[in-house]
Image 1: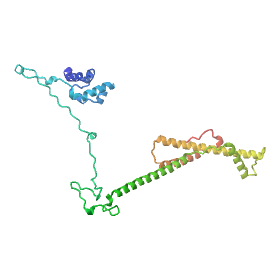
Image 2: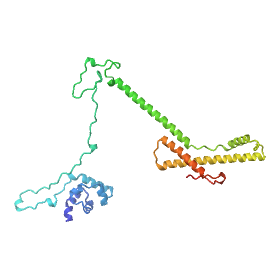
Image 3: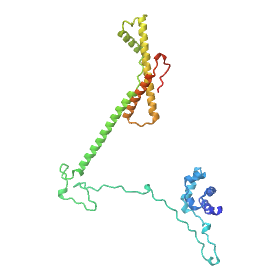
Image 4: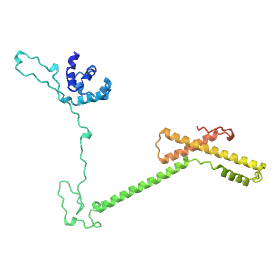
Length: 301
């Protein structure tokens, strides 16, 4: 029974050079020509036809289905009787292939056009279905005295120029505003560099002595100079700790922006950065330890 069902399928496979795939088709239920005609890539994937060459051959065979020479199926064959021996053998009747309905790309819709306009005399639109005629009183005498100024070529040029200049002005304003927000963002995320140690050290030492000359001194080998140097060292350590904390906060914020995938406008991004800087700084201040007990970078919450 299965061989009878596979007869037309085998003939179609031989005609289209896909005989090696015929057993796979029949074993998966494609035993009629109608089912073969509906074969697609999903069916091939379910049947296990994974090689691109086999898929291509099957698709070409299905597309050329209507032109394939297929003999009559057993159910269409008529057993000849003695009275019908002189009659010609009946030919198989195959239903024509169903053509897909045209899709949007197949249908070309002509673009709509504005009505024509009289460009040389009165500048009026032509009324559809009527012949346009301009009287002497309708002829344009100039831009200043035109009766249809909104349709005058010079007026249309002026409008186009205004629109172009307005677009250019808006684009310039947007670029300037974007530059301002980018500048604010860079200022928020910029971390100060440590100053050159020698010059900074000497300037700070002189500043400490100037502010409190009774306790500190610049004289070499004195106790007051040692105290001044210790004060400057504490100041430098504090300055370096603050810079490291700012760098850690900014790194945390940039990581949050990248990880969250938020698509914020520049102004919203600047507001977010400023708010997070305050939140992280206050969180660090609450759990801050003395500088001499710190062993490394601060851990952000």
